[in-house]
Amino acid sequence: MDFPEVCILTTAYLPPVDYFRAIASSSRVLIEGCESYQKQSWRNRCRIYSTGGPENLTIPVEHGNIRTSTIRDIRIDWSDPWLTRHKRAMEAAYNSSAFFEYYRDDLFAVLDRRDTFLFDLNMRLLELLLEMTGLRVDISVTEDYLPEYPKGDLRSVIQPKYKGPSFCEMYDKKEKTWFQVFSSGRDFVPHLSVIDLLCSEGPDAISYL
Image (tube, rainbow, N blue to C red; front, side):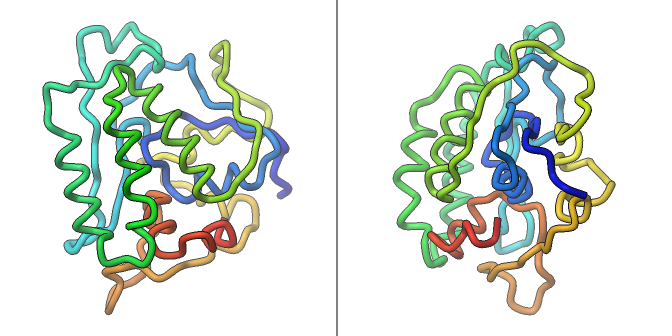
């Protein structure tokens, strides 16, 4: 199956590698900005590879108006010291990797801005990660909510609870693996944040996308 020129993705916190594979396959990307917030998704969580195996890092959000707000109005809960936990977890996971030291300061600088809204933080991180991976694509945000798109709709596909075929399986793409820091004696772990790929492969990450 040929991949359409336009793909539609949800906002995501340090998105998984398939998210960037979809971007790399597209000439234009729409980020969903008009949907309702959904729990237990990549919208406010990412997955890294720690010493104990895959580890989810979740940004807590304020729940006051969560049911009536669109995703762009969801506020980060800064009363929870989540940022300290996330930084420590990433350092523990990737300090021994080949390229973490090259990306750490820029990544943490975005996190340290302490954005009020989850969507804003995710968009800043996406812009940085596109620069780090070397991907160039037209990114825009939806202005209206559409429950369905005829082609390229990956909003429910690239999510942790999705049980169907992977992005590569859907579009007959070869899924390349890379060296993972704690992979000795273990199987390759898919669906990790793109930072896992970047920390291991650095500028060569684009060849895996």
